[in-house]
Length: 103
Image (cartoon, rainbow, N blue to C red; front, side):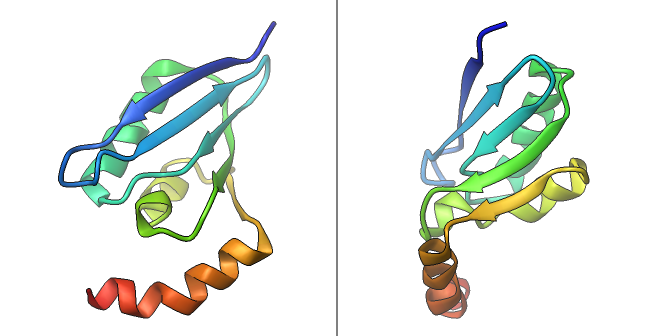
């Protein structure tokens, strides 16, 4: 079975970010959870209606908050999924997180 790719646009208030779901024969992965919690709730529902394959990983491509801020509710909904980011992405998140939350 070839990989299937799906895209979900978040709300305008959520900066219209795009979350990608890649579904394989046995598992699925997510790339870039959205910015807002309300959009994360929508993404959880979308994943559950899009595939019955377990979500195994959530990847963050870069440190901007519209690519990771709402990861927690998604990881709570899919407890077997692991959160992944390259070391330079984690450094960027750690460097700017407090300022981004304050803003």
